[in-house]
Image (cartoon, rainbow, N blue to C red; front, side):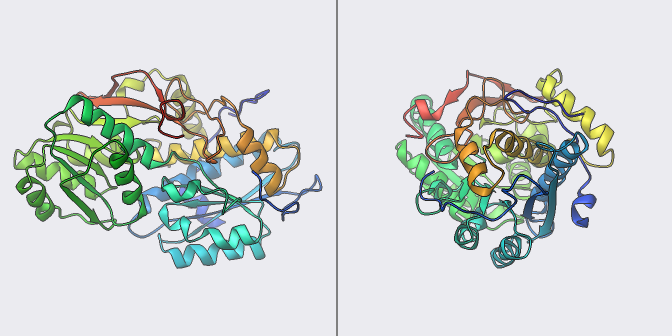
Length: 403
């Protein structure tokens, strides 16, 4: 089901990932694509459909289904979306190669990339004047001055780090803070946010995606006297980490980064009993969170999943993220003065209080000078059964963080 908006895009359908596999100042005045008002709107994506972050590839399924549903309902101004996804296995060289083909061979109007490796993949798209939308929280992705064709859909993880740091400084005065994250710029951005709040971890551990044995890292943290642990790492790492900590009865206060504070990535693999009391500043909904069982947007999401992609996993947060990302792209395309990379980016930057099915209550999409659309977080705590909101939403752009 697709619901139209006067200024808001709602609703759509989901498709299985197997279907996926088948198939602003400073910008130049011209861009590739179909700006003449006819033909398909070419959108391409490079996702990790294999490799250490294959879980993130579920986003492709959600995005593909959303665009298919829009096409079924008549497209955007009568024009269909031509959307295809290819695998990069979370390899930056493959992503760069994919992006070059999208720009040169496919003449894409919009390209979607995932993760920190997208930082290295900016040059070919910016050189070709093709809009790049990244699911990535690295601070570098806010550099719209030097890369005017790149935008990040998700918030800057440094903001989340600063929110975590402010909470720790205010509420845990004798905190001995440890950090565990990826061995890339994502971790560096989050650590910069913690530092902005006056928090320097006594132990900062960075490990690659996919690592499952964390026993030696836990020993390091415990030996350092860490009683507050900030962790932002994907499956299977985070589940294995919290499970092991539970087994050895090591129970520091835990802050889980928003990208992985969900049932699919953390709660179920770790065991709910090992997540009790964990805190997380969240900006998007978890489709498996029992506290959201009556959420209308998620009810529509589940209905769309059942109708359009019964074999896909509606419980995966990354699938829902793809759904929300596609909705944001369609929002901008519908309001664009012309369907081109430049017209799309101008509309993206101009979105204001735009509803989106992915977001927590009290949140909306609004363009800011950093090129990002999401600026609102809400503190949640895991009570053993669900993630429960502990405070009202915080707009980082108004709290002296995003500025």
